[in-house]
View 1 (cartoon, helix red, strand yellow):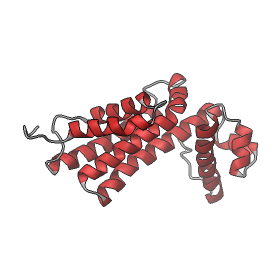
View 2 (cartoon, rainbow, N blue to C red; view 1 turned 90 degrees about the horizontal axis):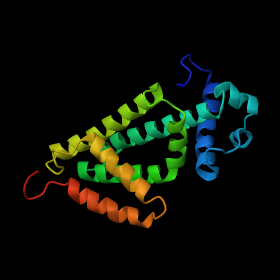
View 3 (tube, rainbow, N blue to C red; view 1 turned 30 degrees about the vertical axis):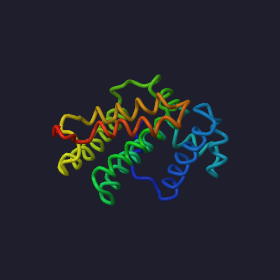
Length: 190
């Protein structure tokens, strides 16, 4: 389910955003089965308000996932504005790995109950691919990143490292360093 399409009153929009933010924290802390009553309490709203915005747990999980992906995608563009292309790519890949390690169970729960061609997955896939491509293109334009690396490759690297290091987070930085070295242009000029 997408965020409501008709404009919300300012207080309703604040409640919606606060519930999504608190749910993100609760799901990270307690898992995808975090009690909805607890989420409503932490958000400072009644359970009826939560259900007016999110008809069930799956709809709330979907909203949290979509919000996370939108933030992660926007972060790529923020980093490109404030860092060199290579540093922006490195920082973003690092943040992607951290996101995967922190949110894999939530994402798995969502993916188990939703069609992979759903509007949410399409929106998220597009946003992540565009973010990764912007980072790679900036690095290519700077002559620092290999031309044969595709946006999906970058996303797979981050996802793979995140999943592989979920139980051994200390290994993530080492694997990231190896991956980032492999993305850089070498003497051969790739």
